[in-house]
Image 1 (cartoon, one colour):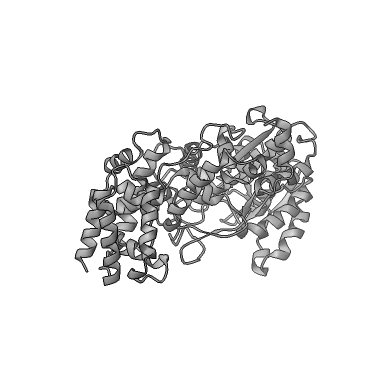
Image 2 (image 1 turned 90 degrees about the vertical axis):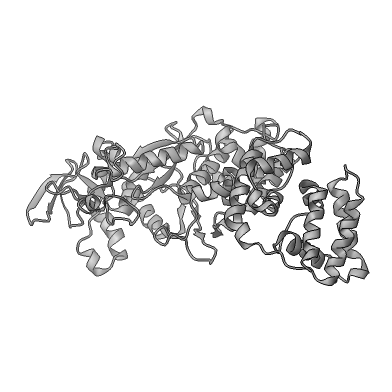
Length: 542
């Protein structure tokens, strides 16, 4: 595949990362900014809490668009044509102490101060609460191999890097008020100011009216909490902007070209887009994505604790499966709970297996193509990993683990697999999936299993299957086993209205669940003799 072939295919691809990237290409038809600087992608993070799946999905999706844009312009990651900034808004005032934080008294005493100026309640040696959470964010992103530059708001404010942009905000103060005041309640209008001064007495971020004394000098006047009238600079970390103004200022100061955000920030995006134009820049391109829902269809909330953490997903599934689940149609809400993990794992591997055999057009629509490119510089189907497949499905691993019950261990499952595949080489990811299958079965499958007694007709069919297995050759294939399972279910003497009823009976009586694997594959993996014992136990319950 030549570079030009990829460019031509990417420019007509309907995959959403390319659709997003094509919007950026309309912004910069030559693939570069007028001043020659890299095209800048940004993601934002509020360090009042710890990073979570929402953080992961935003950085991943932005990275996918970044890589798609590079493909459109024929660039490689190492060419430096793009940048990704992970921005931490750690100058934000600390408004509320979450229930899950230590040293509540310390945090209560520092409410309303910038997050970067509050002592670390975790006492891990970080210089501030925000520094602790920022370190967590960087470790979190590094864990997944993201290519990014970390930028802290406090560094930008305190160093004076934002000073020129702050002066511009002061110059445009009235124009910004004209945008914001109509969107506020009357009571809020009385105290609203684009600029939030920091009290020289208490260090708190103040929500008070501010008079602009000298925009070019950065001087403002306000009344402090104790009633004293203060005149001080808004520069060099002596102020913080209101959220929507701050977001616009950041776009203006850093030259951000692309930033996606959640549906809950739609209004903020509209207002910030107007403000950045007032400042003299252009709103970034960006996608508004839908939010995650729990198993009941309710919006996931950190305060409710009804979400799924990264750690939970990785306990029961793989990193790749999480990326795969997040990839499709970001404009549609996704249910995010433990129950979606097994299907995501198996679907990921199905798409990965297909990749090597697909033509370029289909590759560009394959989520795995994008996921492999995200952090590894993947260039085509010939790359390591494309076309690989698991010797068994994750669902089959779960079925095996559930049958083994308390005997299900990593080493035990590995023994069954080694016997099944006969020493064939397997992808390195398989060992990790064996471990997660044990975890998932222990916590979510085993407690729900109930093997019912078969009916008389089901017992007769099971006996027929047992007779077949008793005489089956030692090297019988999974396909031959599956064929015989089908044939038994079709026999009129057992009275099944359809094969679905027969398979459901197998799952419920042998495995204790309503759903299950291809029985031929399961019998081959678990072993003919072990499977006959399962059948005997089931018939014994009738």
